[in-house]
Length: 103
Image (tube, rainbow, N blue to C red; front, side, top):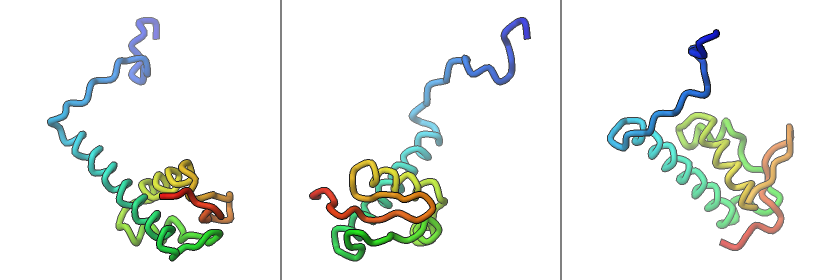
């Protein structure tokens, strides 16, 4: 369009988030859920429920245990992989690393 006002113009500035809105409450709830899942998975590793090299439950099983959708579980797994607690093998599963970091 010659006037540059395409309805899907990604160059439009983003509106700031108002802290008094439901949007912030949702973001906080998601962060809390993620933190809870990460803490739960780490507790399983630290307690020895999942020893080094063990395959952890599937996303579907973890989703059911935590009563949430796939996304928070995936985010928790990625967080633990990035911090050195887990390693993922495509199409095989996610495993506890042989030498997890000291808590």
